[in-house]
Image 1: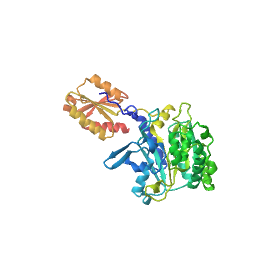
Image 2 (image 1 turned 180 degrees about the vertical axis):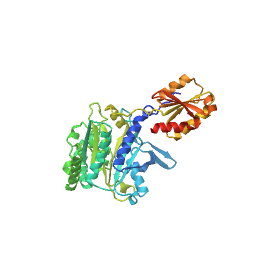
Image 3 (image 1 turned 30 degrees about the horizontal axis):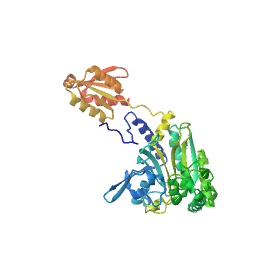
Image 4 (image 1 turned 45 degrees about the vertical axis):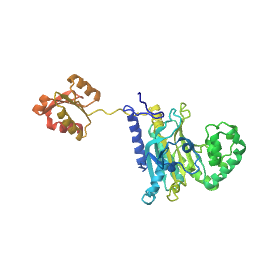
Length: 421
């Protein structure tokens, strides 16, 4: 049988993994600058963690991988925020951590959707959550973290799009206006929008099927229903972005795909001409009631998520230097029945912090030298039966092609000292 990866999944091969490590290193460095701490949550949770009451998002209604084990229902995590908030509440971190509590995560997510370029059923997401302080300046700083990561990877064609959903009062007034406006247009809308009409009419504006309808273009704007407090909050977010030197564009079409957002929502997109439908690099927003939903105190938070595959592709397209795979420090050639001695010497070299490749099988000296060349080793150690008998070993320095004979027991120490020169 010809086994293949499941549809919508992929392998990351050894020749490709360096790009991932490089991007992860940039992320970990930037999150350290911003004082975020890593959190790791399970790959699956109780289904109720994700399937919240009256949630209208496509993710919850169409895309979750849910399975039954006895009487229990579990779901592979489709996004990272819910698990982080669940952990924050379960372990009562609000009582032990300084506020704001700042977390980041990197891990696999799962959504059952049609695989296409830049969109898979198993994908890797990096995200952050900043919990406990409701502040326009915190919103701006959170956007700045994502923006700085993107820029640190050399991604140049970037635009920050931002909007506000206002507070509870503003959204309630807007929802009522949308229901009144769309009522005579329901026959024009898709079946999903009929469901959204009842659950959360704001989500109608995010529909990809009905987006070009005339009734969508003439729908009421949220900005007309913002109260003074919501307008002031958003103005302060924009002022803080101005102060941080981050260019942005106010885009009232942004409502975000999850129902728990309040106030600030944003998308950072690629403006490359070839980006097409997959232009979003990262996106997120503020949530006011999410922590209390899982049993914690009434704390606000803000976060965003970045698809790692998208980030790596954009960095590669913009010519980011991921570097080359590191060469070996030492290659140990074994001649004759000396495999055990080769292993012992190799372990001693590795204990000295030297990356070491070793040969344990019967091969000619010429073929082993070719392998040593391919490894890029700075030192080639030649250990044969005669050397084992005499307690010596030959070391060749590839930079100047000089060769010396040294005591076998001192070989690792000598090479280590050369490395420190």
